[in-house]
Image (cartoon, rainbow, N blue to C red; front, top):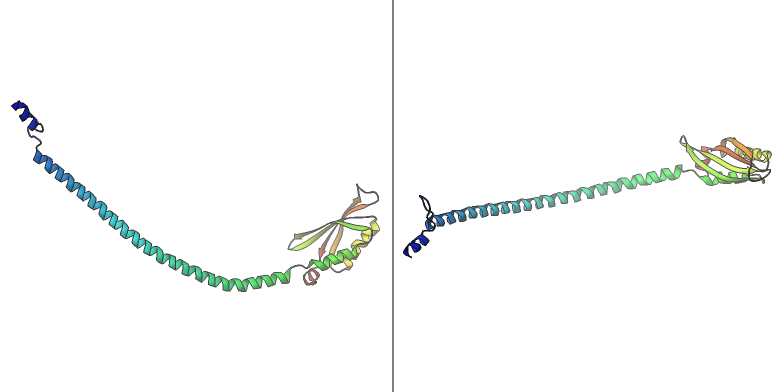
Amino acid sequence: MADAQIHRMNFLKQGRRGFTYRDMIYGIGAWCVFLGILYGVQVGRHYMLERDIASMKQHLASLSGEKERQIDLIRTMSKKRAGISARHDLASILANRPRWMGMLRAISRSLPADVWLDVLDVKVDKDWYTIKIDGKAKSQRELTEFILKLEETGYFNKTSLENTQLSETQAEVFDFEVLTEPVAQKLLRDE
């Protein structure tokens, strides 16, 4: 039994050099020092990150202030410029817009009794307008009278009969297509 106790007390002893309690204490101490250094590195890293975050926040605040100042400056300048340019652009648009009322009155006054319109189509060609008029007429004479009256109004020029044929849906009625251009001075200055 005495041998068993001795053997139990020296259970760490193996080989030529045994692992003793003192070696265990040194090992635990070294492990604690290593963990302390690791903890210090982590605390130092955390401190550095906190300091970097604080400086970044301060830099961000200064950049945000500068951004707001620049935006206010741009708004102020654009309001001054937009007010001037918007008034100028609006005035030029209103001054140069076509006035269609007189032209429509001229078309309606030029219509003989036996001519009626189906389609009035305005297209922009080469920076100006082309008007296509489709309709029906009971005779070729009435259609010719309509084209001549359009030219006489002074609102239209280059008026031409593009197509005419007997209507497929109505007896003794002609379908026609007339192309014309409005006169620029009349269209832009008419009230």
